[in-house]
Each structure stands twice: as structure tokens, then as C-alpha cells.
Length: 193
Image (cartoon, rainbow, N blue to C red):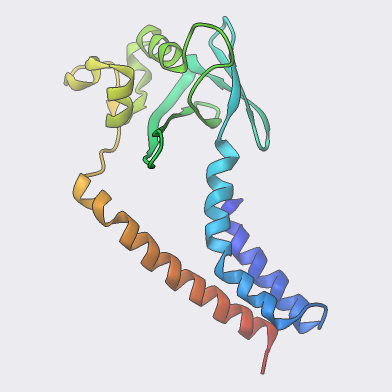
């Protein structure tokens, strides 16, 4: 859904300018559409007011409505950290066998934490489950079992720190090129002379 956002903005603005409903300056909106699509993709899965139920279900409120993740049928556990000048935003990314994905940090009320609930579900699950756990999530959840070759979990992807250092530069380069292509495409579609 989020990947279609720049294309929809491109077509809609182009057709509206061509029909002379809006000014051709709106084609410049195509320059920000890639950034908006990234925000939509990230915030679509971001959850809050998470409630844990006895049968291993974790219900989370998101922008697109309430989502329920089955902790007993997890397929992927990841971690995202956003470092800022203030406190670091550190969240878990959970995906279950039904394809439900949520990004969350803490539970609503109660003494139990998301970390404890996920760790408990992973350790109590069947050994042949094959849950992919990223290296950063292993650190946060204190799962030493992943390090063993015959461990219960499959080690997820590990991004080298050398690549992470170039990620901002590469993302700006890709963003600028994509924004210019979308803006030029908007002008071509709008047939501005």
C-alpha cells in the first residue's frame, strides 16, 4: 500500500493539472511523496496500548485499526532503534504466521513487558518452529540460545556497521533521484509547456 503512494500522487496530480483543476505548482508535491510513503509504511505497523491475553495473543492498537499477534506462532522478531539527541526509541518488530506485523515497545499497564512476553513465548514454543530472530533482538531479549549452532531459533539478518555508516548518504541519494524522476514524470503527465 505504501509503495503505491508516490505513483498515486504522480498520476492524480498529473491528471488534475492536465484538466486545469489545480495549478502546475502542485506537481512539486511529487518530490515529497517518497518520504510520505516511508512514513506511511512505518507508522502503519506502529502500535500502542498493547494488551497481552492468557492464550498468547497480543492485541495492539495501530493507525489501521486493532491488530492481534499470536505470540505462540511468531515467525520473525526484529528490533528497530532510532537514535536521537534525546532518549533512544527502541522497539520490537513482531510478525506471526498469519502475516500480522506490529512494531511496539511496551504493554499498557501491568507489570509484564513486551520483552518478557516475547521471550517467554519463544522459549516455550516448539523447537522446530524456526523463528527468525535478528541479532539486535537477541541482545534486547537476552536469548543466548540463538548463539548455539543447535539452538532453537534461526539467526536473522545482521547488517554490518560499515553499511549502516553509509546508509544516510545512500538513502539521500536514492531519495533525491526518485524525487526528481517523480517530479519530471509529473510534468510529463501533466503536459506542461
